[in-house]
Length: 290
Ligand code: NCD
Image (spheres, rainbow, N blue to C red):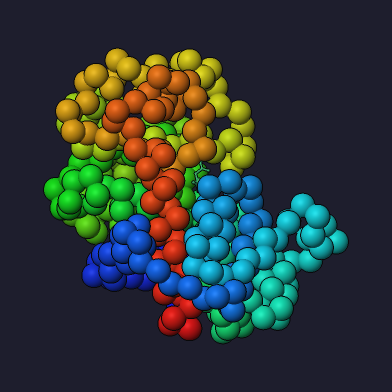
């Protein structure tokens, strides 16, 4: 079983993954006794996703290989495919891959014969992030249908936004999209944050993806926060039970002010905790359905 995009999974299957993640959270034990090897191949920088997959694999009793892209043969011109094929040839049991190209996995079809878990492809998809976001939302509200979420920031360059907008709409959530004009996409109606701040159940902030931009952002950090970011003034307008999410890494005092990062409404570190359980579920499923 591969996990490329949540579009390949039904709503029932998505809920089943979340149920398994919840079981791991509640202490379910699976131990591969060091007999399985998970290779983490990150061709883009990562802290959370990489080490969350690594932690998940270790908790399942797997061994892990952590590819160091900086000191690898990529520097000698080796391609992504050849690197991936190499780790398959080592005898890895599953591959966790993050790469800069959208849908990099399309080139692997029929050629790589072990499960691939997509840890983010360019601006395309980030299924494990969406699943941990969904788990966090389900734990909070016990449902998806009818919930209102505002996804705010650099929509155009965000695989988190692209994955989440699609799956959340399928789950019956009302998704509002907001942020600077230059990062908008025609297919989504944009609304000013102040119009929806008091109506939504969830505010999900996104980092400005500077590394994917051709030109520098024109706004200062302070200006960005005043126009599009979260600060105590806006937090005070949120519904009493509404929550704040961010996939991280966050830039303090840009997407959200320092004093809101760990405020009562913030679930940012809860998302990170849930990430390990979701990835335990994904690795477990990948190893069992080979
Ligand atoms: C996100 C990513 O890499 O897409 N981070 C993550 O996986 N938690 C978001 C980002 O880099 O801004």
